[in-house]
Each structure stands twice: as C-alpha cells, then as structure tokens.
View 1 (cartoon, one colour):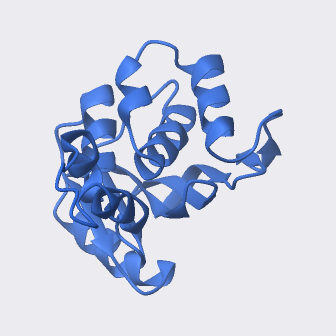
View 2 (cartoon, rainbow, N blue to C red):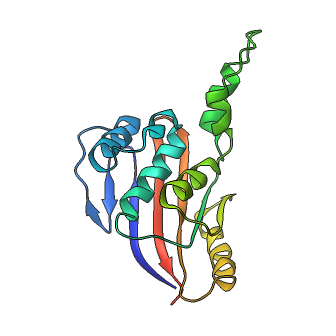
Length: 175
C-alpha cells in the first residue's frame, strides 16, 4: 500500500500533502470558507452537519483531479454532535423532531455524500472504532476484495462539537 495524498483539517488549520492552506476563519466557519473558495457548486453543503462538512471538504481537496474506488472512514464518537442537537428538538416536552437534523444522526452520511459527489460506485463504509490504527486491517481486507490496482479514500473524521473536530484522510493505492 502506498499513500499518494493526505490532508489534515483541524478547527485552526488545513494541511494538504504537508503544505498549509491559508484560511482566515476557524471552526465550522473555516469549512464554509473552504467550500466557497474550492467548491461553490454543491448547495447541499449548507444543509450538512459539521461532521459531513468536514469529511466532504477533506475529500474535495484530496480528489480535485482524481477518483477512488472506495471510501472508508471512521471515528470514535459516531455522530454525537448531531445526535445531541437532534435530542434538543424532542426534549422538555417539546416534541417537534427535526427531519433536517435526523438525517445526520448516522455518521455514514458523509461517505454517501462523498460517493454521490464523485460518482464512486465501490464500497462506502463508516466504522466506529476506538482509535485510528484499528482502521488498517479493514483497509487491508477491502484491498483484498478489489481488483488491482485499486484506490481508497480513507481516514479518521472526528467531530465532537461544531468547532471541535479533526479530519486526517489519505488516498491509498494497493499497487
């Protein structure tokens, strides 16, 4: 396996292949700034929760001139930030659940958004794991089921609050 590209996004910075991308905003506003600068044509972005925005923007920056065969992401907290937001719409006797929030109570929505945007028809999966290193055997198994050469967009996408997140994604080839 070889890594051909990687990205790391935190609330304060973006590193694409080890080089910083200049941003003026922080947190969720930074993700919107990146969208406006690099994407502009996927209005559904503004309906996404922070976890989906984070994974989506990381994928957009990595997949500018290429495609992959599969998308496999993971984190430790699933969709906890959006789950909490959704719970607030049905707590304290106010039972008006938000369909717009409910759809993002599944962490795998981010892999679906990436696959739709980039027309990826291979495997898409989102795993809840204790630590990022647990993803490696899953990647190995996925490659064993793919024709060679194959590529996977993979990594860790964690979001515990609107301005507390980290994405560390990479494109891996099995040739």
